[in-house]
Amino acid sequence: MIRLDSRSIPTCTIPLMPRSIFISVADASADQHAAELIKELRLLDPQIIIRGIGGAGMLAAGARLSNETIGKAAMGWRGALRVLEVSQMIRQTRLSYQHDKPDLHICIDSSAMNLPFAKMARSMGVPVLYYIAPQLWASREGRMRKMRKYVNKLACILPFEERYFRGHEVDATFVGHPLFDELPSDRSRPPGAKFPELPPVIGIVPGSRRGEVKANLPPLLDVARRMLAGFPGTRFLIPTTSAVDELVRRQVNESADSLSTRFEMGLNSFDSLIPRCDLVLCKSGTSTLHVAAWGVPMIVVYRINPLVWHGVGRWVIKTKKIALVNILAGNTDLVPEFVPWYGSTDSVTDCAMNLLQHPALLDEQRSALGRLIHTLNRPGASANVAQMAISMMTPP
Image (tube, rainbow, N blue to C red; front, side, top):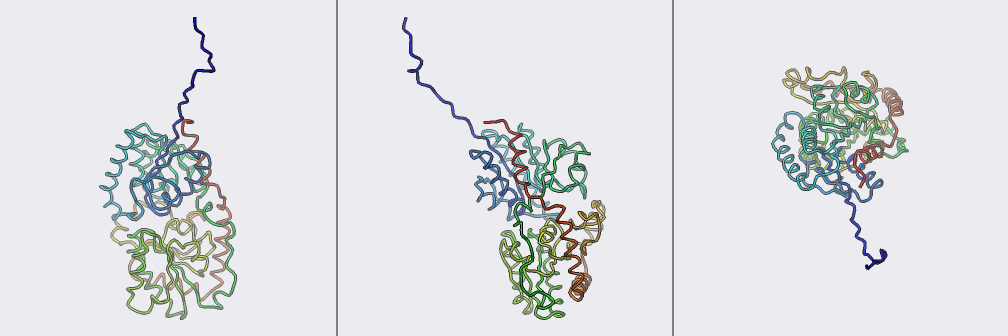
């Protein structure tokens, strides 16, 4: 009988398959948040494979993209035109899942696009982590049934959301706001003389989607023109994203007078331009919190067709206030808001002129914004979500 020395028997090591995640995002801010999340995921698992649909931020962070979605981001009726395109992306993703199924699907923001993606993922046996909860507390609460059915875990970025969603039987956890992962810890005002010693510097944030810019920028340019007449020497700063940069520059340069010479525009320059401003005219949305994080006073606007507002908008919006900073301040008027904004630009112009004519009002708002941000300024959201994601996957 021949006995083999076990030490002489070659061993065969079966390589462990790396874990993989598919991430779906629809707009520039979600793309940025996804990029930060990917960095944190790679710290926890350097071998992890990230695929998805998104933009330049995800690509730079090392994700493999099957579709670019950022330049096509839209809202409202314009967003409805994307339904067929989203359906096609979902079909493509379903096909890819059939031969290369990920361990987890992460949806980031944009419930109009991501709830159908969540439905598809769950139908394929892939767990779903939803990061940045849809603001169902403000409108479209009817989508809650889909959240319960298609989302395994929900990562909330506003303090009150965890309790709200848990009250509707959604497994929700407050993780912090990713904005504070992406901003410098020192956000004090730049040194040097400022308004009223010098002419004012006004920021304009018309939106990160083409539809928003087309609706908001023309009336905001009219406000700017009238502010310049009242305060000669005023300068205007507009941060842009890749989705709207060309459109913003064209609209500003096509101004019928010399107004365009008073503007400075910068691609992906929010955090370098906004701190220089004395006042910002800001479209409603997460950008209001971004402005507030820099402690810059603002007026919040959102241009909307009155027929759309009276026919639909006023019936689906449930909050007393629209501006996010006002909602976070307990539905109070921390900052002036003009939502909906239609018809004459007089109301916004008069408000802006009043603030500039009474600088103490700007100082009061700046202090109030500082107190609000102090309650939210807790970095770590991206790391918290990365840990949630890893815990939802089977170890390799």
